[in-house]
Length: 387
Image (spheres, rainbow, N blue to C red):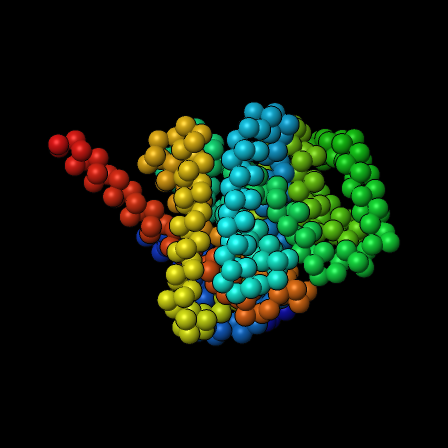
């Protein structure tokens, strides 16, 4: 218990010091959490030597993120954005993944199934990071921001199939082959029961007019659904995602968001700190030009693909490329995919660490490159006005 409290104080102190500093530098809170993790981890001050247990706990932040994403997926929202979600989202994800798979097969003759897993993981952007940037630049509610949100939404929808693909590569599909239908039946039962039970449960809780009880009910729904779906052999994220969808049209939707958001923010911050501690900085020291070059290559490819798609969807060139840069980094779910793949011995540890490091560097470089791009665009506009 004493060690747990000491670790908690270390994590909180690292976050409180690093995050405001990086926010002041306009580099974003997520990069601050990653830097805090590197600082206290094995490649920094070595205050925390083994972040494994912390990473498992912190993955609950990803679970709650998926729940909140599910809450946003009301049928009305999906229908209104259907064209952008399907066309922009699918083209970006599949196009980026195909390009990465092709490069991996050509450069290192990697097995196709592993190359596909890496390609899909790297095609994902960071929802938390990108939404933060879209909000800070005040474009989230514009047509450009909605296109970016549609792409992120499709990526979030694709996370569950990607995680299931990793489980299949790990042999989870073989182990559950004789009872695959159990998971399907359980999901159907959860959907039916949730539709008729969740809202009455929340109404009953609301009658007591207790914010603490509502918080407990919200956490019970998220974690209970996550554990229930995991018991069927699927991921906890799938359960939380389903719970969010079931409550997307609930009259308690906004209250649930308010209750879960602090836990999501805290655990997601802890998740990024744990990721920072697990990044193999030694690879960066050994091959700095290669790693940085691969991170820039990833960002360039994603920027061009997203920028071209946004341009074809009617956005001005400068805005389209800005959106491409905002979505150019690797995402938090790439860390989850690589972590699961390593644990299941699906992928070589050094390769998984390299992918995770590339994602971390791409996050680190997104904000500075975006600031640089905005300065270049602004200087061109000033020069054009003077001429």
